[in-house]
Length: 420
Image (cartoon, rainbow, N blue to C red; front, side, top):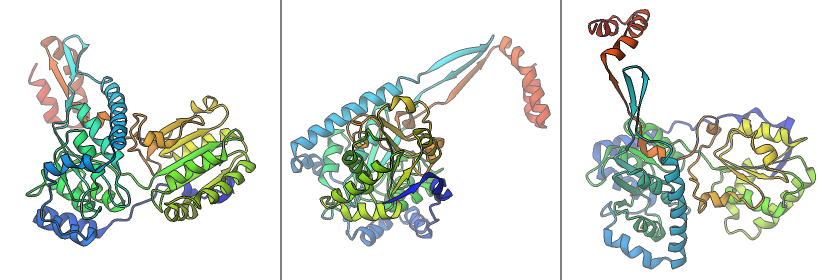
């Protein structure tokens, strides 16, 4: 993990990283659209090395999955789901149906409708990301989505990991399909003989999954185009090097492309964290992935003061931003661009991943400049209404006709004028 000064940062550190177009992704999606189940089975065998006899997991298999996992796991899932549900419910309470008279006789309104059908992609390659199922399904259910389906790859002994099935059962989701990768995104977008087409797809995945979501967008809605995970930690001398190193490693272990960055005004702290990372890597079962990530993307950035750290964070717009400083509230108000902000020494990012109630599907690759993470409002739509009386028409009609005329849209103008 390199230590560099702020002024030596490359402009590429702050740049949006393009995901190269994958011709293979287009080819697979095209085949799935044309051949349905046959194409899904073909590519599952090719990429996951599993020959499927059926795509849907039988409901009895989902029910039995709870017997294959520890009861402590089920209890932890329940706690996490409860907190996600509480947070999502509060978010949903911020929107409602309304009708408002903006001018005499001009009534504008808003309706709140859940999206009818949602597909949740749950990665299961290197790790069974049960938490991604909770983060997608619980807000969808709170929003009132009628049909929730789940797709996850059969990469655990030729099946979906039982922890994922047990979590689905806990949430009363009985439509689970043992497919992953591009083929899962294509199946949910276009529909096949076995997999119903959905209206929106959510959930993280590798670069191929992300590229597939990008290609099917329009046919269906998507949540966001998530790239490799990121964490930035701002720390001063009050920080604990052991904790900071552990938090950096917790992100680095996700993926060799993950980005873990420490920004500090203390060279002494930077050196301590670097040494501590090496010590902890020796005892980490995921050390190979974490080491590759840190060697490739890990940075310790030295700044003169915490105001410079804030400038770097706002420009980088990291997915996860931790404040391991003596007075976090002194700088937290100046931070504007982040997926989630973790304030104080006890507030590790991992709590946001699992049990705090926050959603961990967050913007990456600088996109927190203009967007937030997955939330309950991603599962509703807000169409509008208009009702105009004669008085209301007299209030706003002439101005509408004038604007239409200026734009050169004669049909628009006449549609107003003929009502006079």
